[in-house]
Amino acid sequence: MLKLVIFLVVAALITVTLPQVFAAEFEVYTNQQIYSTPHPLYIYGTGDPNTPLVLRLYTPDGSTAEFKQIIVNSDGTFNLKLLDWPESSTEFPYGTYTIEATPQLGPPKTVDIKFAASSELQQIPIERDLNTQVFAPEIAAINKPFRVFVQVTSDGLMVSAESVKVLSSSHIHSPSGKVQSLATSLDMLHEGLYFVEYTPRIEGTYIFHMVAFSQGTQSHASAATLVLGQDIAGLARQVVTLNEILNTASDELGTLQTDIHGFGSTLDDASETIRTSVTKIDTSVTSMSSAVTNIEEASLQVNSLLFPIVGSIAIILALQITILARRR
Image 1 (tube, rainbow, N blue to C red):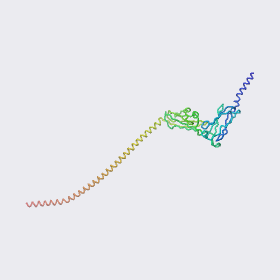
Image 2: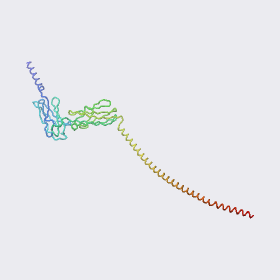
Image 3: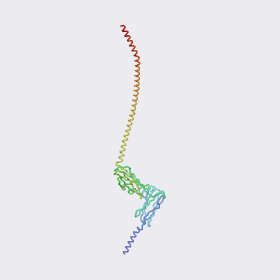
Image 4: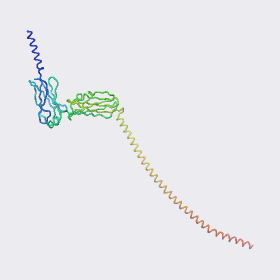
C-alpha cells in the first residue's frame, strides 16, 4: 500500500512538471522585415501549448496600432495574420514598427519591422530613428525660474509616452559639479514634447542633458544656460531707460545746434553790415581828405594872389604918407 501511494505521488509530480520541462521555447517571427501597401503582416512562432498570447503592433511614435489575443495551439505553435498594410496616413505613417508578443508566463519578446513605400530590401534600414532636441534659454538670472523644453521624435513622429518612461535618465550638470536627476521633474506638454521648470540657486553654466529612450532605442541631446547674478530683464529695462535719456539728450542737442546755426547766420549778417558800413566810412573819409587837399591847394593859390596885391597896397600907402608929410 505504501509503495502504491509513493508511486501515485511521483506520477502526480511528473504530470505537473512535464509541461514545464517539455514546454516549447517562446519565439516570435514575421513573414517579412519590410512591408508596403497592401502586403499582409503574418506573425508566427512557438510558445506554451494552450496558453493565451497577447500581440500588439506599435507605431513609430509608440502608440498601439493593432491588438489581438490568441491561444497557442496544442502543439506549441501559433500563426495569424495581424493585418493588411493600408495606405500611409497619420494613423499608419511610414517608419519602424514594433511587434510585441506577451506570453502568459515570462517576459515579452519584440520584433522590429519597417513600413515603407517599397518593400524591396536594398537600402531601407530597419533601425528606428530616435531624435531628441533641447530648447533652453541662453541667459537666466539666479533665483528666477525658467523652463527647458524637450522634443522627442521617432522616425519623425512625436513619441507617445509619459516623461518618466521616455526621459528617466535625464539630468542637470550644475556649476558646482553636482549632477541632479530630472526623472521626476519633467512634465509632458503633449505627445513628444516635455518641459521642466527649473530655479537656479548659484551663478554659472548649467548643462541640461536629456536622455531619451523609446522602444529599445536611445538618443541624447544637451543645452546650456548661463545664470547671472542679476535679472537680465532688469538690465534690459535699465538699457531701455538709458536709451530714452540718450534720445532726449540727442533731441535737445539737435535743437541747440539749430539755434547755434541761426545765431551764426545772424552774426554773419551783422558782420556783413559792419563791413559795408566801414567801407562806406572809408569812402567818406577818402572823399573828405580829397576835399581838404583841394581846399589847401585853393588856399595856396589865394595866398599867392593876395601877397602881391597887399604889397602893392602897402607901397601906395607908403608913398601917400610920404607925399603928405612933405606938403606940411
